[in-house]
Length: 138
Ligand SMILES: [Zn+2]
Ligand SMILES: [Zn+2]
Image 1 (tube, rainbow, N blue to C red):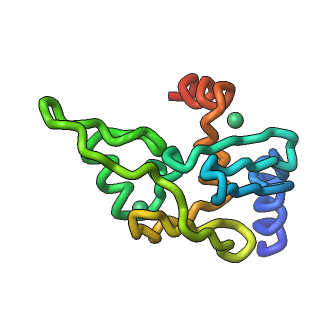
Image 2 (cartoon, rainbow, N blue to C red; image 1 turned 30 degrees about the vertical axis):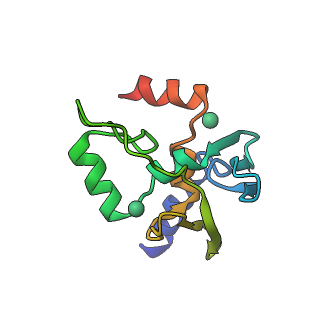
């Protein structure tokens, strides 16, 4: 029955309805520090721009991360013996909302394919509590 299906969808969302909802989002492009999200369940997440760049959720970056065995937000490992290449610190040249559920970053290296949804950002919160929780479930 259609009505039963609908109620079960609501039931699963109700398990933690505020977890993926944002109360406020601050992106400090001018200072170049990063982004701070306050969630409706009271949690706060602070992301540096290099972290976000290395966590880009687009298919290209996902693919590249899988090949080099990195988690979202982990910096690219320099290949052994290679001289460190100068790389400008990642920062967005432009940030725009995508609907009401995500942000799109245009990075200073020209990359602009990543759409960062609230659930993705919450799942990859870099704070110690969330990292420890993510470790525990693996
Ligand atoms: Zn990407
Ligand atoms: Zn966290």
